[in-house]
Length: 233
Image (cartoon, rainbow, N blue to C red; front, top):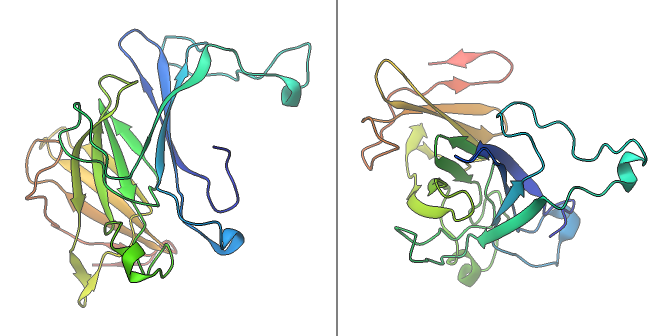
């Protein structure tokens, strides 16, 4: 599906398979916005793109649209670079999945760490995705994130999904997961999660165990980091 002003690609991550071939993962939202009212709501989507024409050394891609004989806008990408699969966040479950894919209109900024793709979900009723009829609201989950196994890059498998119902300040709860970053602390083996809530806030979380994540993941310190530079502990 082509990108549009309100239904467009929200995030991209690059990974390299054992054979050296690079893959790109894209997520696209499907919720209505100001510029596409009346078009209806679609489930968010994950797309898998094989970049077979690129070098296998893991370094910079370089452009696949630079042919000295043509203008870049007239250059078609090599046939080795192609979409190989796509998945909707619509509750489906295959034999590879450990649990159903979450239902969401709005996946956000994604990140790959090792053989795991981390996907946050920004959409919920009455919030980032607009106010819908009650029957439509019941069809999507609250903000949260998913972990997808990409050890087989062409066949992603859902392994974990969690909605977070955490009070972070004066009774207020997380109401948006616009994007999420994750890294591992080599000294403790724990994972640090940084959530961009939208607007002007970053939320910091840390896992409690040396694992991708556990049900016991807890909030250990909250920094309402205002992007102007003011930090509130």
